Each structure stands twice: as structure tokens, then as C-alpha cells.
Amino acid sequence: MDRLPAVAWRDGAVELLDQTALPATERVVRCADAASLVDAIQRLVVRGAPALGVAGAYGVALALRDPAGVEAAAERIAAARPTAVNLRRGVEHALAAVREGRDPLAAADELAAADAAASRAMVAYGLDLVPDGARVLTHCNTGSLVSAGDGTAYAVARAAHGAGRLARLWVDETRPLLQGARLTAWEAARDGLPYAVLPDNAAGSLFAAGEVDVVLVGADRICADGSVANKVGTYPLAVLARAHGVPFVVVAPVSTVDLATATGKDIVIEQRSADEVTTFGGTRVAPEGAAAYNPAFDVTPPHLVSAIVTERGVVSPVTEQKVRAVAE
Image (cartoon, rainbow, N blue to C red; front, side, top):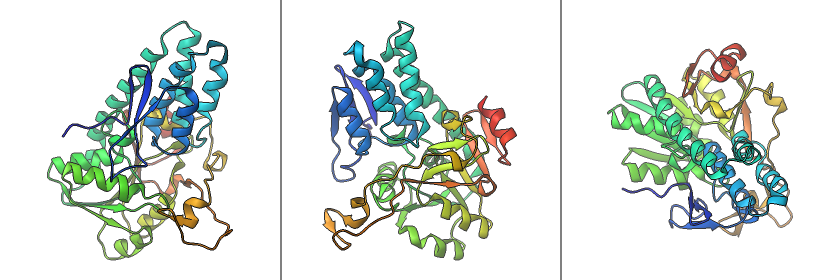
């Protein structure tokens, strides 16, 4: 089945497969200026670290229509979501091309091609960590919706299915915005994977029943020490995996590694609107005026991470020395 790309440049605009409309509707949002792209990024029309990097790079081409304001517009794009390092790196990659008198569109295309190649390499390395007959637990969404290629953690599970090694893909629903139930389950159904969706708070009983062989997740930022920022709810899975002797594997491109951020304590965690927690499908589920704690991400410390799979190889055990060796 043909797939609409998560991010593309067509006819002078950035086109985004609207992830807020899935799984009910496949529609494309066109962003003809930097302001509309910032809005789309903040509303999660496009999300996922690698895809955000590509979108940010294409956004610089939009910003260049006002040469005098390109730097300011580029900064607004880069700051639209602060935790995922790829967004700012994508913007900076294309902005460097502008400063050097090169075409930012070509720079963005280079970034997309590199992301697709990284996805293929991560699959090759990651597949070795998935046993035969594996029951894989994943969180959030890490397939082609987050990438110019097949994705990260989901791409490994998809390859395991193709190799006849996947018995079950367990999909955390991923509250509060249900990126697992809405997006990963949609991709798994499209790709013919054997999958089941579970509430996030059912993961513990799944581990206790011995129904998980490996956890595969992505990352939005990896610190120099190997701390991993990913969609909120990832850290509890790492704790459960360690308690039950299950490998906890992070699959992410080297572009996600931020050596300038020493530890997880140095990561700025995006705080999102209380409405995402206090309402559901447009219906209020908490009292009017209720406060809410709604971080978009949490941080998993390196001692809970069994391995980090990158396009340059597998980091295991996860130490600062090994992280630096693969990223520098």
C-alpha cells in the first residue's frame, strides 16, 4: 500500500500528513509560511524526532521568503517544541546552507535521505536484539509517521514480523493523546502485524504474566551519559523491564544524541496544556478548573537502558564513553 509521507515539500509548501486526524482520516495539511508550520508542530500535526528535524529544515525554506526575517522565523520554528533535539538541528542544518549561499531545500532533502538511510541501518542492527517468537512491547509511535524512512523502534518490530520472528506487538495506548492507539495501531494494522492495544497502566500486569520478551522504544533526545528523553510513560516501562529481567532497548538515530546535554537533569521537558488531560475527545472528564500535570516527556536513566541502537551500531552497556564513541 502506498504511504503518504509524514513530511514533504510540494509546490512551494511543506505538506504534513495530519497525525491529529488519524486513524479516522488521512489528510494533508499544507503549510505555506513559517507561522503555519510552527502552529502545526505545536498541535502535533507532525511529531517524532526525525520527522521534526526534516520539517524544521523545510521550514527554513519557507522562512527565506522574507530574507530579512529568516533568522527570527527559523528560531520560532526551532523553539516550537523544546525537548526534541532534532527539530533545532534540522533548522540549523538548513540555516547553515542559507548562510553559505546554498539552497535550503537541497539541505532539507539531504536530511530526509540521511534519515531514511539511518532507519534502514537501525533495523539491521536492531533485528539482532529481537528473539524468535518475540512479544514486543512498545510505547508511543516510532514508525514511518516519525521519519522519512520506516522509522525507529517500530521499524525494527516491522522487520521482525517480516522475518517471521514477531509473535505479538503490544501497543501502549500512550495517554493522554493516544499516539499508540491512534498511530502505532494504525501502522500495525496497515502492515499486517499481530498487535494488541493496552492501557498504559496495564503494562505491569503484562510483565508479571511473562508476556513481554523485549521493550522497543524511540527517543527524542539522548544525553551524553545515555539518559533518554522519550514520550512520557517510557520511564515506568524501563523500571518494569528491569524488575522483570526484560531487555529495554532504545532505537534512535545518532542525530538524537545531544552531547552538549550532560545528563537527563539538564533536559527542558515540554509541559503541555491541562486540557489534554482534563478533557477526552472534546468531553470534559475532570471538574472545571482542575489543575493537571502534563509533561510531554520523561527521562530514563542509563542504568535502566539495556542497549541503544543507532545507525552506527549498538551501544551496550550504556555508558558515556560508549555514547560519545558512537556519536562523535
